[in-house]
Length: 197
Image (cartoon, rainbow, N blue to C red; front, side, top):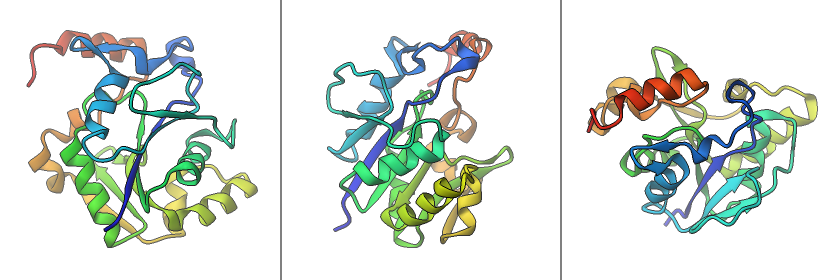
């Protein structure tokens, strides 16, 4: 039985959002972080928040980024080192609409490859993807060389691409994979709240 973990990457500076804690933003009456943890807790009891402010979070453990200043790839490295599962689903802290069924599907696909990652018209979504422990060494090598682009890692391991059509049973992939990078995007999200299932 493969043991699964989950990690929320929260170590970014959020410069485009004035440095605020994007996980604390309210979407449909709950913070993004609360929404994420509710979904992740349906998959595993090993939930990490990587690089977050040191405030207690129910059902999750906060871990310091082992590679600060190295962007999401550093956060991924920390998540894989600190998690207990053979596979870890990794999500960005500003994705309010991720769901347990979608993430379960990605984790299940790691039986076929070291990474299971959605790929849509807008490209890969490496911050809503599942990674196995076999990624630790390739990630470490890239960090040591200063090669920090997440998708470049895909050249080093087996990747299972998950096309938009495969995501359709789980809902609108644009919604599922949406994130909040700027105040304008958050205002657009607020305008939609209560108007979508």
